[in-house]
Length: 116
Image (cartoon, rainbow, N blue to C red):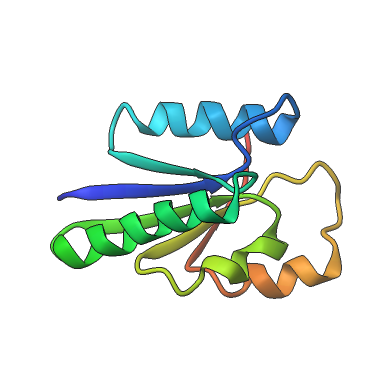
């Protein structure tokens, strides 16, 4: 089974989100090809990555395309139109999500959460 991963998140920085995003996709790269898009980049840079993903999806329909969102769920809507299986890996260090996040999390195919 051929799999390729699109990693959407905040890669550059020193916060917990940044470090988790870096390490998570670094680990995935040991098993699958990963195209990383830092959502802090310019819109032009993000668009280039998105265009590459869409082109690859069309050229390789036999490949399973998986999009992993490691970002705040309020950004998920921006990328739901991309081809592939959408996974939200949501890290939130609280017992309650902000209200608008829940509606966006309902739109992805899978939700992953960290655990022991």
